[in-house]
Amino acid sequence: MDNLHFYAVFVAGLVPLITGFIWYNPKVFGTAWMNQTGITREMAQNSNMTKTFVLTYLFSCLLAFGMAPIVIHQFGFSSMMMGVPGIEDQSTEIGKTFKSIMDTYGTNFRTFKHGALHGTITGILIALPIIAINSMFEMKKAKYILIHFGYWTLTLALVGGVMCAML
Image (cartoon, rainbow, N blue to C red; front, side, top):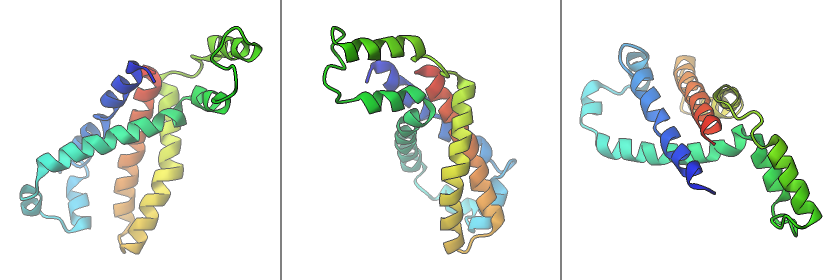
């Protein structure tokens, strides 16, 4: 993994914080979210926000790292070929074939728009079921589910876009 991958992870790791500052602002969905959770402004002010933001950034970097193989098709091909004898030796037939394929198709679908599409799909197919299942067992209302689903789908779209565009 090259340094660019890590830079992309560190940049994309900022996305959940930035979208969260906007999405959960009281003028957007913050007040509705607080009403659904029972959290008050006093409770929020008494929490350790430094710890929360640092851990959120670390978890967000993990999320960005995990999004790379979801939004970049070449990861699937590379992982399929990983461990094949001679794959890294360009003097072998398989090494030449692998290099040729990557030279020809290695940058296909590597745009912000494409990454955002896959991030949105991830929000719908992965984030929504997780949020909905947890919320139902916690006896939360549909509004609570929709607030988080919207946030995570937007966030995953942006993280996917950043990762796909930067790698």
